[in-house]
Length: 458
Ligand SMILES: NC(=O)C1=CN([C@@H]2O[C@H](COP(=O)(O)OP(=O)(O)OC[C@H]3O[C@@H](n4cnc5c(N)ncnc54)[C@H](O)[C@@H]3O)[C@@H](O)[C@H]2O)[C@@H](O)CC1
Ligand SMILES: Nc1ncnc2c1ncn2[C@@H]1O[C@H](COP(=O)(O)OP(=O)(O)O)[C@@H](O)[C@H]1O
Ligand SMILES: [K+]
Image (cartoon, rainbow, N blue to C red):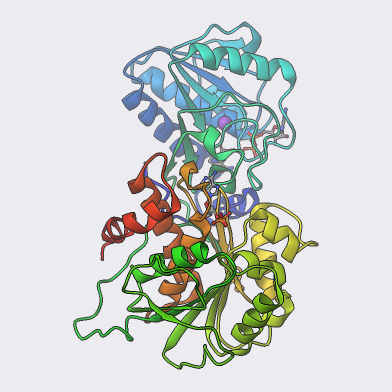
């Protein structure tokens, strides 16, 4: 049983391909899955009675195999099914179960509920009587565990096809799937752990890994650690937050055109002028936090786009940007839109959150950080990282400004890529929120960054 950080994420179709390519026959895979599920249930179920709900397909097949293994291990277990099995594999698994099978509607509750109704094959919502039974049994259970996925969620989009009571634990088979990470499905999974069933997972998507930051090199100097320029505008607090966060990572932070005095003394200030960005030591420019919507903001964005610098474009600058302008630039750009800014930037891009972020990155040539409770980072190459941890206290004014500054500082640093910088920034941002704790304000995130950076190994 493994935590999901850094693991490859597979869609339903990619999972089927991986299963076929594994060289292991499907019955053996199901036996492994069922045995691994039973072992976890045995360990954490405390010997209490288990009720296994089996669906008609192979998810149900996993359920029958797990039930048989639990019985063999001496755990009291009952099985309730939606209908007879409809796949050869599931029929085989059902034949291996020596006990009775109750109809779900008539099943009485047990302390441990194992949901093996549907997995990656779910194509529509569950019938209403089944949803009602599932809720009634889950409410009476002490522990609900979902096999592969909570039954009712769409594997690839994380959409909810029918109401689900929520599991405490979801045992993902072989690899995490998008629904384990995307809203609204992700919180219904509870804790997600992966059971290894011997398939090699390959795709361009993976769970955001724990950030890995190195301490500065022994011979580092402030400029070799990275110099970041934050371009300020109408709302100086926002750029001050971005610059303060950047200063925790970069060797040198330049705040250009800010009217605020309330800044760490470590941040160097400069007036805005057309040539303010003509400094070859600048490794990345952050533009957007508090920039405003006016002509001056437009001129600043034009100057940043005309420069050779790597860019982090956030907030107000995303309202002024024509993403087509990024195509002709040689240096990398990172866009950090929330859903509203994304819809404004890419009005025609539709699909799941993963599809949208990936399409936008491909079209613009920029790395796109599509923010929210289930932040996704997509590179123009099609590589995608999905954030796994959710700290809703981050939904507070200015927290995006902190993320933009942090992203710029990491992008300005040595030996990095836009994808790596954005990934580390998103991880550190959430870790800082976890450390800052409930009721955090954006300023607290900058104070918690040193501890978050220490957690990242630096
Ligand atoms: N194929 C393999 O080699 C393996 C598959 N495994 C399991 O197999 C699952 C996928 O199995 P399946 O592809 O059979 O799919 P499911 O068991 O998820 O769904 C079964 C079938 O039910 C039907 N169905 C879909 N939505 C329905 C609804 N709302 N009401 C009624 N019927 C509905 C569909 O025909 C679907 O194919 C995985 O999630 C995993 O649990 C594991 O045993 C590991 C190995
Ligand atoms: N419900 C939530 N759970 C976790 N993180 C969230 C949630 N809502 C927003 N965030 C994160 O908080 C930050 C908010 O950024 P943004 O919307 O740009 O705010 P602002 O412009 O006020 O700084 C983003 O990093 C986003 O991913
Ligand atoms: K399930």
